[in-house]
Length: 352
Image 1 (tube, helix red, strand yellow):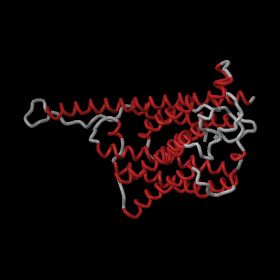
Image 2 (cartoon, helix red, strand yellow):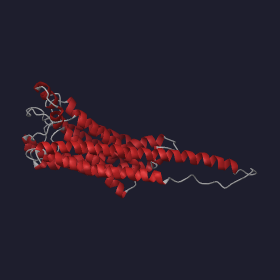
Image 3 (tube, one colour):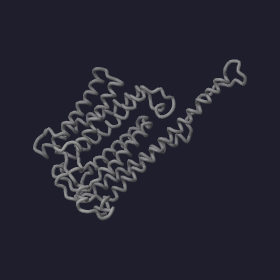
Image 4 (cartoon, one colour):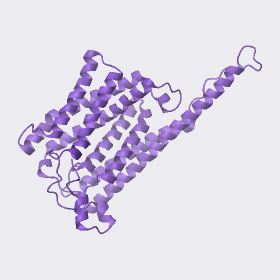
């Protein structure tokens, strides 16, 4: 296959994965809808049985427990998980094809589009693998919604041509650095979803719907801590070990006060404070959840915000790139040269 065919195949794979994630999201929402309906019917039947079963009431009957989830509900939940797993496989194929589309072949994280599709893949992969060990299938609606939204934003607003990596990115230390950063980002993102759910669940008294299915706040707090405890050592390895080594190879210094370096360290400090507070000060629940969400905010600002609001970051490689259209624009038909350069490699399009 030619590079153009690999690039086209990668875009088609991302679209196919997004469709599968969307179908999984619909399956999860259908499961929640049937659970709400079953709970409502069960509550109404319970009220009738209670009235009929009062002492002295005519036709008194024994009170029946609320109906268990129907087979249709269980199948919807299983279908959502299966579709998510298939989406992860298709997503992986799209990532590999993206790397094979480059000449020479490279890792698929040369720009913000590639970072985004790689990061969402890890989020979905961690969710699927974690579901095999612990019961967090109820997190499926949030994970699939997040991944679908991120892929749509990447495909519609972050499209970039497949270009050779700059010299600064041609380093095995970059591969190790980015792999560890992406893995920890996926764990922190799921941890943030759990922390957000904790804050909502702690204030909710819902007996039906999605929040009724979510475990108790103590369970959410514990699961969030486990995700953060897994992600923090990996983030430490990425930020304090492999990142400085790569920076020294690329720019001749271990620390350059680059905005991304500074914000990565801020993120490290916030998550270190989160874990330290839980271990020593006994922080649990609301305070820990808020601190975890602050860490997620710094993480995603570093991932996205710096690229849009900072013009001094050495992590931006838009300048000096060879003008070239992505496969989406090439397949769309003739485009004027000025429009082509402005859309694909213009200075107003930040890259990772």
